[in-house]
Image (cartoon, rainbow, N blue to C red; front, side, top):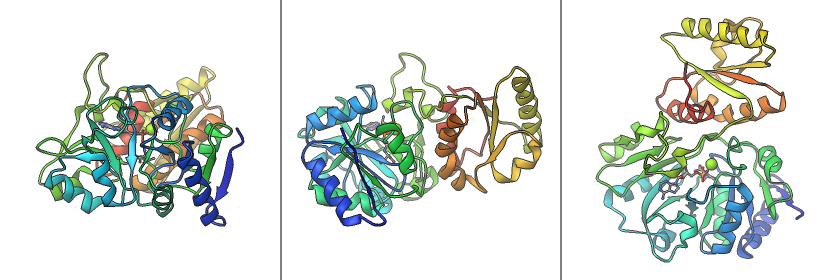
Length: 345
Ligand code: TXA
Ligand code: MG
């Protein structure tokens, strides 16, 4: 398949129209959102949704998020929406917030992997909402990466994984948030965060009065253990390099530990790399260091790109300096713990 590419800076109308036409025809289109690029299909077309799983190599039991452009579309997808759920959606939409609600029977089971709940999100990205509106249907879309690869935060990432495998890719430049949306269960008494993201637990608590963060957010899931959100099971977001997260009492002890591990690995012939906040870089001396931001938000925006660039540079071992697991730092640590196969030193 020849993949058509449109640059939204110069071909906005044309690109949105072309992608919407492919979606209406039951084919796949990749589009930018404020979090990461999405691999979209008509949520009400089971054959089109199946193509998403095929193209990504995604496990069949991992459900997709349905993207909407307007509150009025919610009624087609979800039912039994509580007042609390409605308040949260009104506060955080459009934005990086996915509401897990009771599913409407008419929505194909392919989208929800057979669950009786569905994740719904109204993206902040104007291009994403215009595409949904122009397509005339809600769009089911996971992140536009091959299953197991880091999520795509730039056009080049999506192209690298899907050139020749999808009908259209819309180039909207770099994504502003850089980690995927907060996935929040809203069918119980209190909101429960299944996957942390740009909307933090603190922000959700402010609206709902309470919030629960699922245990699996910062831990592994044991084989056979039941989880509320299937995506939490997988070793995800992984570059080809081995990833080790280094945490500690303070910056000095982290640097001491990290430097000694780095030197041992380098002596064995491994090509090593340190990813850390800008301010820490001097503590690693002459070693190979990529500073990836002045604060947690900037680290979030750059982390997936750094993991992909590390692969291109043939790095064998990445050492990641832990960030504080609060605010958007919780989302960064959740992704990196999975990239590291749940190993933190
Ligand atoms: O920011 C985002 O959320 C991006 C953009 C494209 O919107 N999408 C995204 O989709 O990250 P994906 O498929 O890569 O991740 C969706 C996550 C998975 O971990 C999945 O298990 C979880 O959401 N999920 C989806 N539906 C669910 C449901 N009904 N119950 C629990 N978890 C659900
Ligand atoms: Mg994903």
